[in-house]
Length: 226
Image (tube, rainbow, N blue to C red; front, side, top):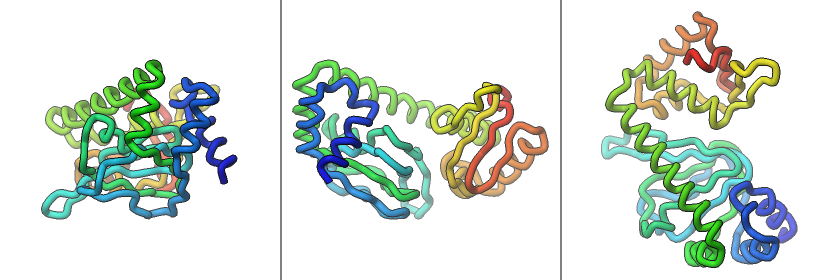
């Protein structure tokens, strides 16, 4: 198991800046877990004392309103960190994190992770930049909720998914494939729109020849026109 965990850490993009001895040190601190699909990793109000590194699968971050309505904040793929606000002093989780497909995650206690940051200034900067980038994305999404129409939010989300999770077709930079199992309801929760609006927008985009959609993938035909 230790060898497998070390292999996962060595192949984690954000950790490339660490030396081999530092990677081995993190290996001793980290706990690797297999998370089955639909397994909740943490709930709101859980203690925020761990940073998670996603090696395989997908993880959904979402919030539930008092009325029970879910808003998906992000769907994360391999190579991403989550639960990172514990680094900034957050003591309680504010969102739900759940595996949307079978996942492999490594968890590191916040005190150990902060010690690694203190020992390696370059790693510290890398993590700080990452947190800033994540917060900027959240701000951008909030601005979209205020200033964009429902249709614009759906189109922007598709473009964002293509850029973050899509595989570009070699001979045509306009075409990208996003292999994610997303229902119309999932897309609605990600774009803060209704399922009916999502269905209408996706149908229009398919008629225009901009996308092809099914529940296992989104094929973007003309990325720049979304």
